[in-house]
Length: 230
Image (cartoon, rainbow, N blue to C red):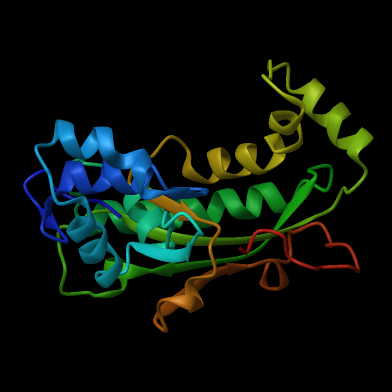
């Protein structure tokens, strides 16, 4: 997702809405965590703000505890907003080139059987599929992947071989996933890659790559349960 700073989202300036949703990205928190941000933005009626974000589909109410605190989490749409950029639009010609490069890099990755992961499928969704839209904000991409290597020791060895320094053991374990996304994105801010199951919020998508349709791909393991779909 790409938005303009001048946009209004759920009645809020786009930058404020993005900053607010980011507080709830990847976790479940009480709305009090947003008090400071709301005050800094000159917003007094926080309850109304959360109601509008919920109605617009960016936040979901998880529970109200015994003390009356409301717990919220970002929805799929909210997570997309949390990752949104305020970059310049791109032409459809550029978007076509980015998609072609994405498919080439997916095939390149899957051809290497030593990689700890494999790409099962890549789907495009969003404004790219509407041919009358030009320029585009970005290209929305769903990535589904599985594991070739499941042994934690082998993952650590692979991670160590990268020569990178990691702040925690969890960072080491998730390096293969991060590496895969970085490889596919190829430093392009216009490729918005999500691991979410887009069937939860759209019925319009286009498959641009599958491992089954790639004769150059190293065969995937017999157990092909996907871990790249949340």
